Image (cartoon, rainbow, N blue to C red; front, top):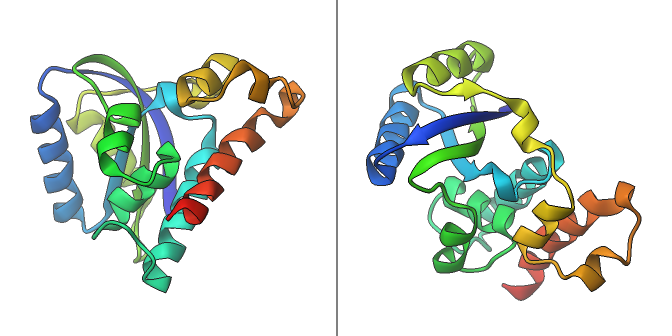
Length: 169
């Protein structure tokens, strides 16, 4: 079971923020991954990254040692963390954030999500998950690649990049 949501937040210390997320994750026995939402093209983007990462872990074709990091690789469309983190990792300052919370038990993720948002002084804003042509460009797609499809197919370009991670592994 998973929960995906968008938020805005002011991060003054990225390492401290990520450490606090890790601690929250461990305390609540869930998995949490955060992304720079400016590079996320909708909920399907993160669902696909999660499904690919989960499958890689199950098949032992994973690149990293954790599901969180594997999701990050797929969501970035990259094979290496040294490229994925600068691409879609959070930055210092005001951020549009995307989160995926994953639970393997039967916890109440809606309640945990509300508590998480409050504890981390975030403002829930799912609109930050909506992608557009600029999102595709930030993600690394060229104008030529973008123009090969109609606007309603833009999400497919991102899903294609996620699927390509399996091929370049």
